[in-house]
Every structure is written in structure tokens, then in C-alpha cells.
Image (cartoon, rainbow, N blue to C red; front, side):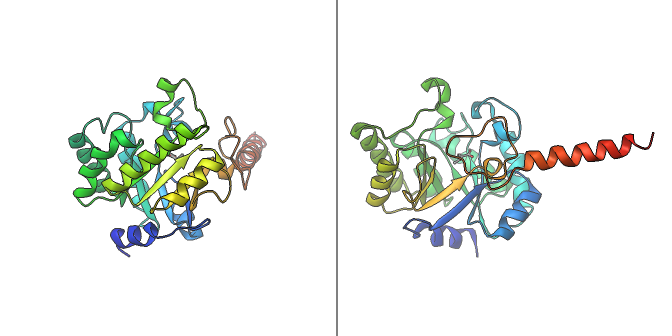
Length: 256
Ligand code: KIV
């Protein structure tokens, strides 16, 4: 399938459980997750925290994103590759389009950026150039410093309405899907039911969105220093790594 065919197929998947998405930052993981059948490989700017060791995503640069998108794209996955526009690379519609083109040249099939009404013109500039865009609403990690932490969204009718207004502005600008992050289950469900494009939830509860996305290190248990409360690890790779490394070190030292 071409990237546009993949986007078209995903954009009509509504209903809980319709899309399974994972973040991915390198070549071997892209091969494995693609073989497992994920619909989307998101090269998210979460890589700043779980791969590069920064305290939050505000340290991620375009150069970081290009390096990791190129690695994922080398796997030539069947899954749709979405690349994140890092902070301050989409401050104007012109800059947003230039950044989106760079991500696509690195191998992304589609791009994602954070925010609603205030980003609509930037999204429009990108979609009008033929590049598919995924929206991202609710808790926006790139705003962690302004907001003084990671706060749940959709707790009041006003907050829920603001997210819905953002969703409508993004849909009007041409997004094919919207990630909802850390939105209360009730708000996520009502937003999902009132918009035409699929929502992909993280930290929004079960069966509230049309799909789900997980940060791969949360799923694999390979970043034990911070595990979000909503994460549901299916493995404990950090223990396996410690065990294998300790066995190797003991084997080498036993030769002395
Ligand atoms: O950067 C990222 O990994 C994301 C997901 C948390 C949705 O945006």
C-alpha cells in the first residue's frame, strides 16, 4: 500500500479497538513491531525522554527526529510511519510545512503536531501540500513547562468543549486522526463519538477512543525509572537486560 492508501484506510476506522499504534525509535524495533502487526509506528518526540535521557520533550530537535525517522524507515514497514514535529519547528505555517517536508524526506509517511485551534493554519499548510497530518489534543507534553507539569484534561465541561473545538478546527484543516492524551474517560468517549476521524488514546482509559497508542518502553518495561500510572507493561525487559549483562560479566571475569 502507498502511504496515502494507508492513511485513507486508517482514517475511516471508527469504534473501540480499531487502531493499535506504538511508538518506535530505531530499525530493529521497527522490524519487530511491524512483524507483530502494529498499524502505526510513531517516531514520537518522547524519544527525548526514553531514548536520549532528557527530562522532557522540549529538548528534542529536528536533527534528533530526522536521525530516528531515518532508522525506522530503513525497516520499510507495512505500518504507517508518523513523525513528530518537535517543539519550535512549527511556529509559523511556513516553518511547519518546511519541517513536515524534512520529516517526509527522512522517511515519514505522515506527521503529527500538538495543539488545536491555534495550530489549524499550520496543519492546513501541511495537508494542502499533500502531507497527511495526525493531530494531538488533551495533555500536550511540549507545553509541560508552561503548564507546570502533566495535568489530566477534560475534567470540566469547558475543558472538554475546548478540546472538541480544537478537534473540529483540526478536522477542518485536514487531519486524518487525532491522538488524545490524558483526557478523562468520559470526555474522551464523548469527543470520540462526536467527531468523524478516529481518535487514538493514551492515558484516556479503555474503550474510550477508536484506537490506542503506547510508548514502546512502557509496554516492554525497558525504562523502569518512570512508568506512567496508566501504562500496562507486557514484559519486564529491564530485568532481562540486567540478568543477561550480569551473566556475561560473570562469565568474562571467571576466565581470569
Ligand atoms: O511522543 C510521543 O510518543 C507521543 C505519544 C505519547 C502519543 O506523542
